[in-house]
Length: 124
Image 1 (cartoon, rainbow, N blue to C red):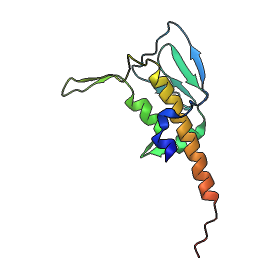
Image 2: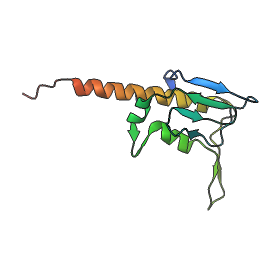
Image 3: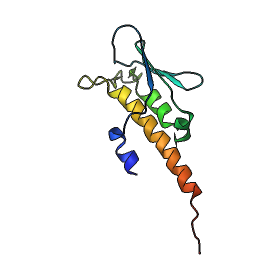
Image 4: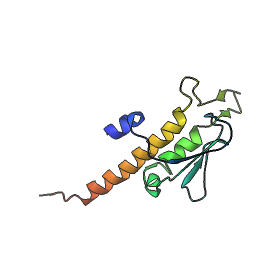
């Protein structure tokens, strides 16, 4: 429970960062590679080395990382015209850090569930 409640205090999973072009932490829309081992953050940054266990922890019909990729993007509501921008002026690297933390929480959750499944519980 503590792992999930304190997800923003977890260490970032050690992903490989590939930086090209001008420094830019803004995200418009992230995308996972077909094999889901790499995340294109924006034109400046790609994160690779995402372990397959990341996708074993699911929130409904998708993994926590897939949820972040879908939700943390700039969008405009068609009806109201309200613009949603997850970028933080006061903490420009927040979303990159969050991606690493969500991967850590996902991998650790899968590990813990496997440990629990291996326990022998006396029903007597």
